[in-house]
Image 1 (tube, helix red, strand yellow):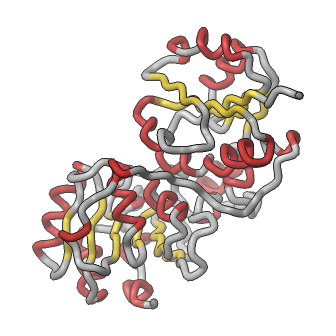
Image 2 (cartoon, one colour):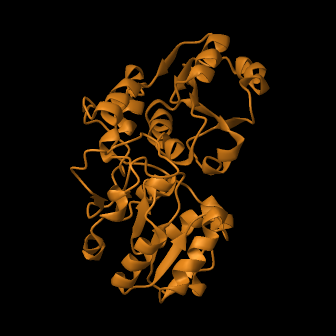
Image 3 (cartoon, helix red, strand yellow):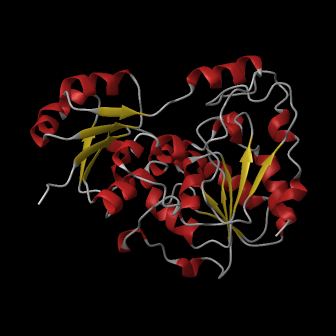
Length: 318
């Protein structure tokens, strides 16, 4: 009987990007019965710890030197590189086994953000990730993303109304987030109970929002990522910026109202196979957009029209 393939999947960061790799992991396990290991940064280990399709997780703090010796002992058949940077190039050289890397389309993104010339393919990043394993016979099962929780991740829902909207107010960059004033205005139009989702850095902003709204609950900074995911899973629907939690919501097949500022869905990282009633909310036809594939601390033009001109009535459509 042939031994199952041993495959190392590599993605070091960050939340959304790692969640977007979960279809690759699932299909390797279910379609090939492969022995799947995953290498990531220790910060993100919690995203993978409950995944039944992963046999072992390796983590690094700062350097691949921390794990190379152990990885060599595993004698992998393939490395599937879903990060594709200098660090992973060095890792693959040192392991010396066959590998495949996904196409980051950096030049195409540069042309779009810098010269507004769109040559990006209409292909989601999940499908670009899957291109790395098609040579093994893997085919898209169209089951979407995965995010697994356990009992430790549960939050007492009795502190909230039976039905609530999860509003993810955070983001890594200011140009990917609605202003506090805009969020307050949207919530006051919704006329529904809202639970604010965010990290410790969003706590004070959350306090400002609940002070200016009714039936709003501030969970920012009170829960870890998995507990916040549990709240998202139990929400009526989710309003979110272009963040990792957006992709977690997609894994739960939630209806998502995703809000886009300096980034655009055309980058191929919009919610993947979420509820069919999901909606992308953005200001189209701005000559300055997209200005970055990542984001800035403030609008380079000073006007922030991509967020300030978001039509608040779009959030009211059920």
